[in-house]
Amino acid sequence: RGAVCTPMQAPGFGGKWATGIYDVLGVTGDANLDASKLFLSAVCCPCLVHGQNVMMIDSEERADCFGVPDASFRYGVLQLMCCAWYSHSEFRGVVRRQSGIDDDNDIFNACCCSPCALVQERKQIIHHSNNVPDQQKMGVDPIRHTRTGGSLTDIV
Image 1: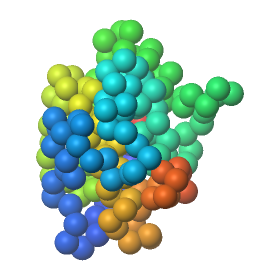
Image 2: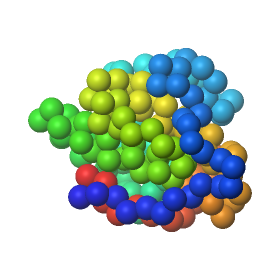
Image 3: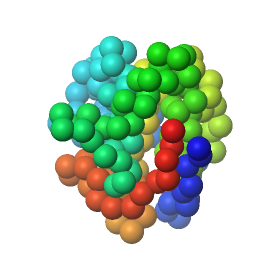
Image 4: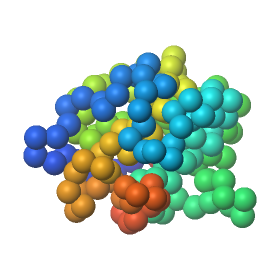
């Protein structure tokens, strides 16, 4: 199942990722988000980071009673079957298209550099939410980094 999205590129914005794929310890754009902890989380438990990223832009995404996003569970199950790259690359494509990024290495980055790609996606979501007009945001409140509205269809 693929995601349906409309480009949310502001005039004069986009074309490249806000950070490089290996810039995992650089500035996140959020004073409350420690990049090293985010990267460590992406290495140790990528399913949780993926789920949090999905929840940041998808108002339809649900979480269980412990606050774990459903996308985390789906990613974890796919990870056990060595297929998490598919879900990850699909979501990465959504983030890329909504930011107006032309790069098309989603599958390669999801397969070979998954923790780095998860961090890059989080930084892009934050960067995009801080740098585009309100009506074009991905559905993220730039202060609290919580969902504000809008939705994606099922990504996995």
